[in-house]
Image 1 (spheres, rainbow, N blue to C red):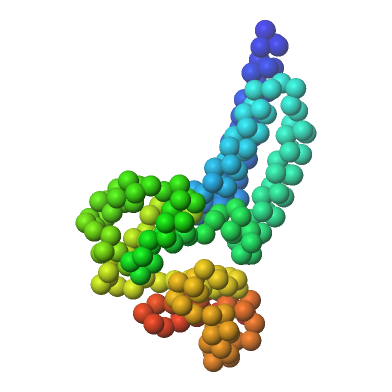
Image 2: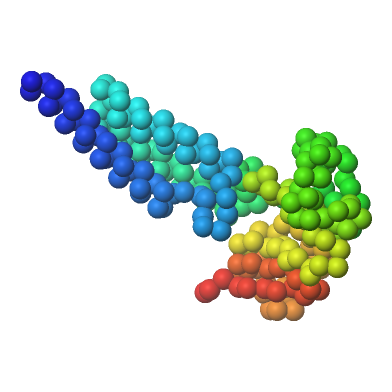
Length: 216
């Protein structure tokens, strides 16, 4: 009888601890913020967290000490991974991905579509969802890192393009707006900005470069 209460009491304690860890993780370590959908990296991280928590709850051989050690190591790795992902272009490209343009100025990039395994039916479906009848009506179309289509119709208001994100230049964005990195540095000097790392965000919109500096 006592063994029954001890075993299930320990399981209850483990369950409470697992819930607390899950809440802390979702509050402080989850990379999927309110403004974006889950990326493949988010799915993998959540899958690993679920495996760790389920193993701790159901496996009687996993002690609280073992669980605490794993959680600490997991948290340190996630913190380092988040820093790498959101502070560097390389990390962002590897773990989140970048938008891939498949139509630019009305011209289809068939090589990019083939590389991304996008068929004509996929493109036609995205067009129907946005009530676009002809390819001739498309100014630009790209695939977002989460797999969504973004389509801009000809004659629509120009879309914004982020060329600097948290101090990192996006070369693909510069290609989209047909500008060079040398031009970008010149624009920063006009604003008396010497170091790229001082820029929080810079975006191109309606023929103008809008720059927001980091707070000192």
